[in-house]
Amino acid sequence: MAAGPGRRRERPVEAAQPALSGRAVPPAPLAHVYWIGGGSGAGKSTVARRLADEHGLRLYVTDDVMAEHARRSPAAGSPALADFLSMDMDERWVRRSPETMLATFHWFRGEGFDLIIDDLMRMPPGPGVLVEGFRLLPELVRPWAAPGQAVWLLPTPGFRRAAFDSRGSTWQIADRTSDPPRALRNLMERDRMFTDRLRADTRRLHLPVIEVDTASTERDLADRVSRALALRPPPGT
Image (cartoon, rainbow, N blue to C red; front, side):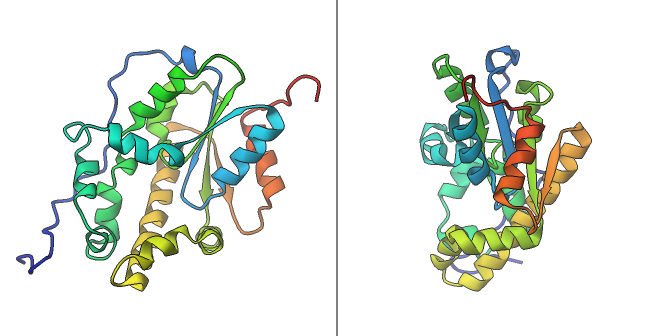
């Protein structure tokens, strides 16, 4: 069906394949790095801040550098990002299906992951680094993380919705469209499918996960992540 006036013609949806940096660098330079990935609304940021404080780790939040990484990403090497930036809010969140949103979202495809590695490589020697964010796709982190250095948090739909309701960021995105209820439904469904994809990928790669439900307290979740990463308090504490 032809696209109507003002309507973007959707590109054919291909299977989402994370963009690999092509590096041949062994993971040894990042042996001091711990990784917490997972679905949106899983409590990654809260747990990471708590563990960084408790264990004397430097915290690197991938959400905080998204705008900078978008500026540093050449259009030729990040086609999905370039396409996303060319859309208005309705094109991004209202007019496309959640399936298309999942398959074409640049961070879900791994674009810019090489910039995360670059940032970590440039950090001065010192305490360990705790990295967190949904951009930590299992197949991209695995070459850089030794066993016991990475874990993925997978939220149930109820936990994810409660998290979004409390922080409001997803509502703010939806409210900037012409149809906030539809945009919100699309975002929630896209993120549900992303969590399902993470579950399948971690299972396929035999990587550790923690299921996060509404019975999980912040302390309980922090303890489970700490055990998964074998974190130890710094000397003298």
